[in-house]
Image (cartoon, rainbow, N blue to C red; front, side):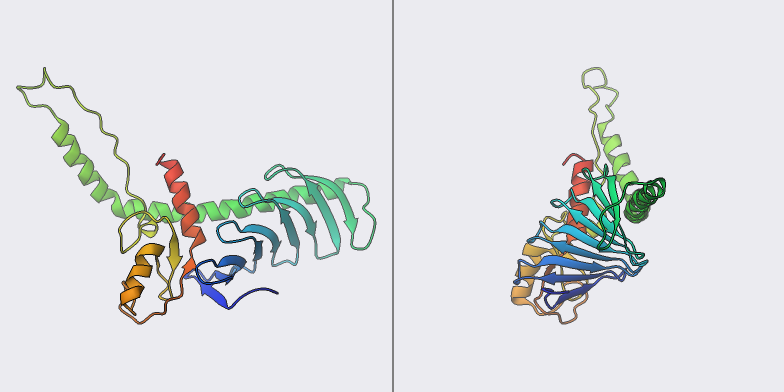
Length: 250
């Protein structure tokens, strides 16, 4: 792909991210998934918006719109047919169908069914991503349930009034917010990410914290192995942190 720089990051789940731009301002340009999907992006750092998705069956989906509001405008199928859509994200509707180098023809019953199949595929893809996130969150919740329950028990005991003050002191209600998932917490600051980034050891850190570390060290804070100073923004962790904050009204 023209314009792709040398920055390449392979994640543990085999997704491959390609970036371009100067150090510290790298912007995402392409994601290659192990299932065969290729997602292309445009836009500056933190404002990348999806413009095209190539699926394993050869179909190419084109999108327009800013980050988070990309709406499908055209789908080119492997047989050469082209479906055109209008409408905002999640409400796209088929407006015409044509062939490459041909004038658009009328929308037929078959083309409507094909459009419905496309919409169903989009919903299925979103559901798969949601399931991945939910499964990861459920795993962490199960692992930390005993610890959280212990904290709740101790706090509950501290709030129970004694026999002599039961009449005078009201019971105080305390809202306990579960700690964020481990993958959304910086291993250096032990706080929720604000600007997460990858290092060459494959781990994610808060950008300010790892920059200070690398200023005086040449090894990974977690593994102790030598690493370089290249940092790449972890957009997935950044979006998951934003979602977690919104969910817990923080």
